[in-house]
Image 1 (cartoon, rainbow, N blue to C red):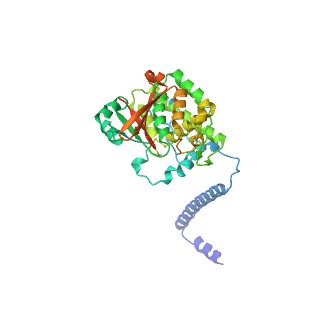
Image 2: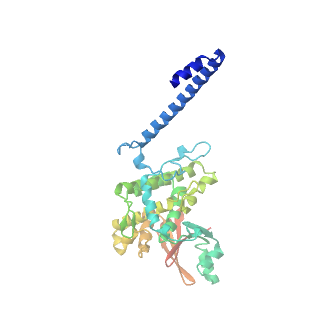
Image 3: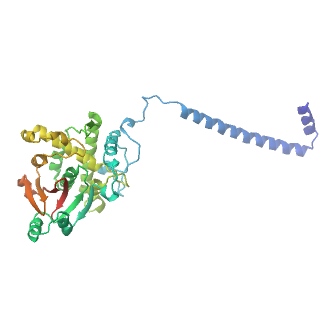
Length: 353
């Protein structure tokens, strides 16, 4: 009955009024129809998101990628465009092993922010003398023959590998000929890459191999930047920036020094196990242990110097004096020298201008 009454009232209205009402009804219908379409589309999208994906349907390379944070770091020099913009790439999932290692060691310690950097600061000659308590003029003059500055290295149990590693990487990246560089890669990147904290091992052999390759790729990248952009300050100081960093910041991710340290620890163990002199390293099990010092380090230094064809000067400070130990002196005049400063318990980097 209600519908009939409405119909009769509408029928008896003037013609112009009927037209107006008809237009209003049509416009309202179109508007409501569009709204319903949007609602249906939104519900359809939500249902699709809720549907679980099969475990074996991964995006390309997802098993090798970690998306915890996007890292700005170039793959190779060909990926640096004409404006010198750095491309981005996904780090291998195995980089999480480094995070686990650091989370259970250095990141647990409450340390002043300035002391977290792997390379803390450069000390001039007077500060160097004060640091090692050198007071006698004769000893100061003697020290000048070997060392005039120093780089203060973070004290964390890995200080030898930081002190040695930074200087060695400078030689590899900036001083090696192309032939020497290729030889270095061929000879030293087939070793194991074990990761150990105390008696706990991290990762399997495949994951460790990917980290070794990641370190190799970073060395190649830095060398290529120096080779193709020699006059560009930003590229020529990349090694010290990469080696110093201890966390993700700007275009740095803080992984270079840990990777270098793991590389040198594994290389040292490899040399000890392959050498007849390795039997003199009585605590070789400490070589692979993160933040552990090897008490037979002088034998390890001698093996590294011989294998890597380096001249190494070890300045041993005790009291207000020091003594010098030299290894593989035959490489002294080939711009292949490394200066290590040690006061029992800690290594630093020596610089001679």
